[in-house]
Length: 128
Image 1 (cartoon, one colour):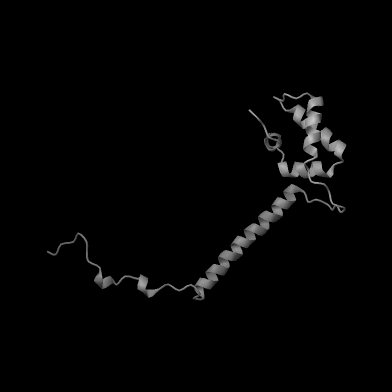
Image 2: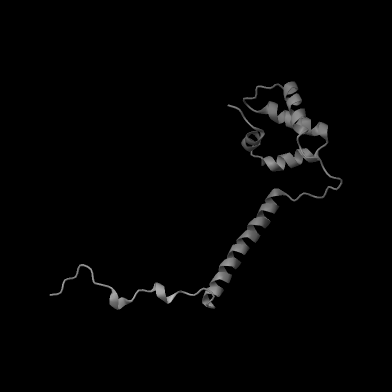
């Protein structure tokens, strides 16, 4: 079975995007060494460390380069918690706004959609 780096990082319990970002921030030689160790360290890896190093060098060249400015990168759990909080708050606020709009009469129910009770024939009831 062929493995991609995404599945390799996932099997290790790492987020592939975070790992790519971490490798992109490292100096090139450290990124190559780190990625080569991951590749060679997989339980069913067919590449010994020297071959994995050659492969890692080719892969590291595909990573984005850092622009001149580098700021602090928020930690993943903190970022997820913040997104979860704001996402949940947004859903609640939208629901409350829809409820208030409905109560204010913004959404009107058409009278034509209501059936006339007097015109409905009775079903299954025979007069006695």
